[in-house]
Length: 261
Length: 345
Ligand SMILES: [Cu+2]
Image 1: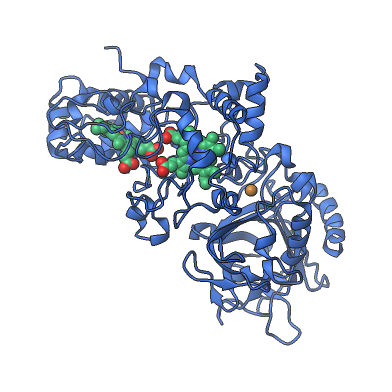
Image 2 (image 1 turned 90 degrees about the vertical axis):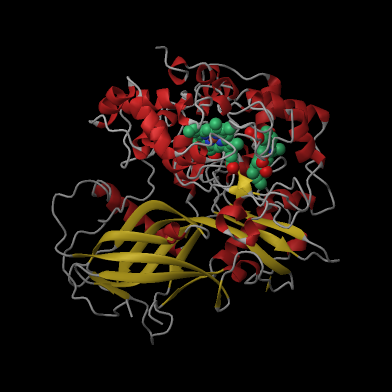
């Protein structure tokens, strides 16, 4: 996969520089702050917990009672290296839960001032570091994925109710993770400016804060490119076909919006 | 407009790969004792003097209106700091409607009480003293009684630098003491450290506990055996106790309660927020075939009812295995830790 290939030289760079977090001997000439804001919508409306019904491409009416997930390995790629600008990379893991606003921002305090043309991150955790006990905060949040089912951590727990064929009430639990030990994490590439003509970038200026809104359209998980009919799936942690189908859908749930719009 | 397209002047040669913002990182490996690193409490750092003082206060009936009831009367160490009575009786003999919570690894908990209405142990400790059906006291009277004690002022000086007695200092000392309620030496922990082996039943029980078939791990998440979140597990179709909704006012929180830790659950009967189940067998009867599709039933359990089932349908062997595993969460060194009992003098 394209963004996977891009990770390789980066990994080499990281090793060569003794990893991003070590004490810096030279201070960057200028850095700014990037705040990533996670926003959850269905279509054009903010996601509501409980109550409000949504409809997916299979015609299932559903509500959402829980949405929590993990994102990791953010990279900002510079538009040009003409003046020595270099990519920004962060190798951490960040947990987001709809019911705790504090988790819905991720702040990078030392982003080198540059024009960035592309953003990448991993939805979930790549297999190499998705190991049991590696992230205690995810254990206490109830995100562990049992060792017998592949080990490591869930990528997402998305849960709620739907109206099954024949009426009444049923529940869905879209739990994504390293089912059977396979890697279903989702490399995401973001077009940062969805509106500007031909622009995909954002600029970081020294001493200033840039906010980037990352928006998940929850309904996309169940709509495109694959239909996902809740009637056909129950608990899916051990269901490789469901994991693969949702992995494909997951590549298109994200977009970036202008926070000022 | 916060994003400034093309605004910044590029600083050439700036160091790449900078910028770690203190987020979760793989370096935060769990402590040797098998629990995550203990959170820090910069507003109330633990000191030996504070813990000693908190220990005395926790076991001292001076905190109640008539000097007859201590925290420890309802939170008894041998019962994982829970109460074997379904409902605890306050100083006037009034019973509440909830079973006294256990207090196990509270330092890691992000809220207190079954409905999470207190954010911290300090906030929590304010409440029982003045609750009319618990200790039924007036804080100003309690502060005066503690200050009049011949020994306490010196203990406050040792804990906080001066002998002044205040409500804030009392709850801080109690919270420091409670944060020492660390349970991480059960058979489960020793097995993970390779010190003992599980029986065949314990292994089967563990594998079932951590499976999608039984779902337990989704909420009773290891190693704390709680996710600190609130769930409706379908005890009642129409929950008589508002639960979490009483704290949040959100209708979708009705009937949800904080997941209790299962560490030492063998000794913490009766079970559930209202102590309705006397035994672990009764608890498993509920999960096996007694789950109601209440409006806010947690989807993790609800998904198992989609085909019309009333529960997880455990066989008798599976129940026995699960109970064998739950009993492996008993930690005698915690239940008998002399440092957590009443002070000797
Ligand atoms: Cu799961």
